[in-house]
Length: 459
Image (cartoon, rainbow, N blue to C red; front, side, top):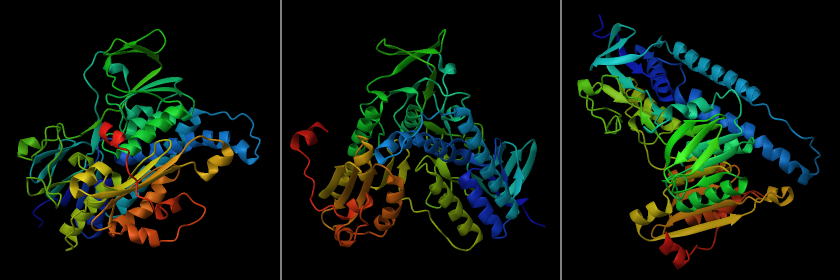
């Protein structure tokens, strides 16, 4: 008779939890997973997928506006927000069911209830306890909001995906990728958008040139970015809300959205009580094998607060399954992970920023270009693409690749393979470009960029 009810019990049925558990099940492990909300997690239900669908919907506005330059006569277009939301809901429902089907096909037992860790080998779900040789925590993160007067009036990105109507005026607080993505969605669909950020630029942690140029392009599009600003309070008004800043300024708006960060969703899980080490913000500490300080408990994805990306969570979950149940020890490689921001225009990036590269390598070479895409020559759209390569001067290896402009995520995904393989600038130069395309610029950059001394000093 087995010592435990299950070989692996997973708490959280998002992308990472589902990927690891179903693979373990496919290898013959006795597996179970519990989810207190809905199977699919942040990416499928409240993040990547629904947000990208809204981005697609918003981009039609640009297409209609640009069509005249190519000879098309387009009648005045009308947009219906409820129709887009209904279509989005139908699609995420389909994807959620696919996750359920994958778990069922791998013979994973599903519990639709909250799970709490009782001890290193026991999980309580719906008042009943189950034992497992190993436990995997994959509960993700949850939006955080500050404790200011009127915070009950604001929404997060969760609620922004389900608004009953498109607000005419929106205040978005935050400068991270979620904030800039929703700023682009709302503005392109016709809302008046004010984005409040504490610093002078959006996207802290990204390459400084990318940050500067995205802010410039967002402002050209009509997003009112107010740097060096903080919110003191939010009040319900006769029509909408009044946002008061710490300097006494007031903004009248129909919707206030906070996108100031997400915290690991570990409160009340019982982890601290059994000795699982966590950071001050509740992130679970893990080693290179995703194992926590408690030998039988593992953690993957946003709950570890390292690289909070869906493919990383999936890779970590699969690595656990391979290591424990397929006699194939795998450690997730967190180096050179590509990422994208589906802002308008979008960003794709892989490797080190210029500042990171200078700190790690000392002497580096920079190659960059900024140009108007071919499509914009006829459309008349005044939007420019930016591309940048960061190269280790000693080895000639390309250690950073950054792009702002149409199709940036699609282009960077391919270049991420080259970066992962350690490609050199000489090999980039030897690669024939596809003409005419924006992507070919990455293999035709010949002149090193010398940053003007006064600009370098200012940064």
